[in-house]
Length: 292
Image 1 (cartoon, rainbow, N blue to C red):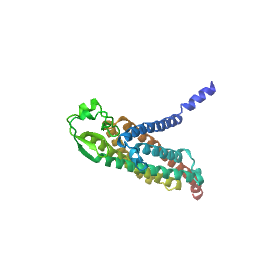
Image 2: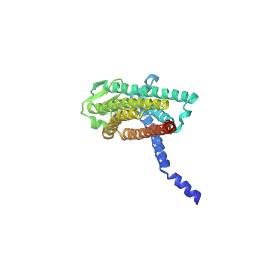
Image 3: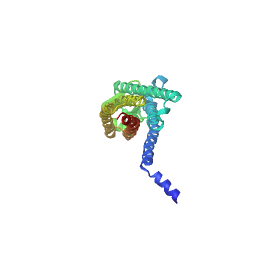
Image 4: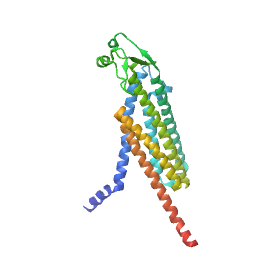
């Protein structure tokens, strides 16, 4: 019974529960990657009916590429700030992590470019007119339901769209009302703002990690970066709320999980900084006594 009790005590320790919660969040983010791939795949089949060329992968699978790269970057931050010891962040391991970081950032920038080009696609529209909209049912035409959903035109959709002023996305067989296309375009703008915001945040995190490794991260500097990132996280929260009301649940849920995940990274850096500060204070204490 003693061994069982000890195991239960260890399992219920706050530190253990915290780690379980943290890695559960990371796991849910990984699961979201599958959902984003499914969304991108379905949307790309409509937008790129003739097939997706390699140079348009970022446009067709921007969410999938973005999420994959961010997951890699998240785990790299976790390794550097919470798992790998400071003295081990050198030599071959340091270069491996650096190469993976560069690869992650390249894919993130590529996905960011994809969001911008997707906005361009949705902005290029033409007036669309047909005598009988329902005659297009089964012809390959689809309609704009939201940013990543372009279902085939069916009897229900044609009845709802009949008589409305419609537009067609150039180079595609996708049609929609001005309001629907505008709403999809606005969601793309939020994607761009969200992606740009995250790029600034991780740049600040990289600066913090670099300065921490070099022993140059002061309390004052850490406070200034935290305040700056506080504003940036507020913008991200506003994007999540916008998705919650006007986008789909997956976008909102994913944005919320990413905010929680990077709270963990922020806590890692804070704890890491505190440990280094305590070690320096312990090293300097004997010197101070000797001088005194």
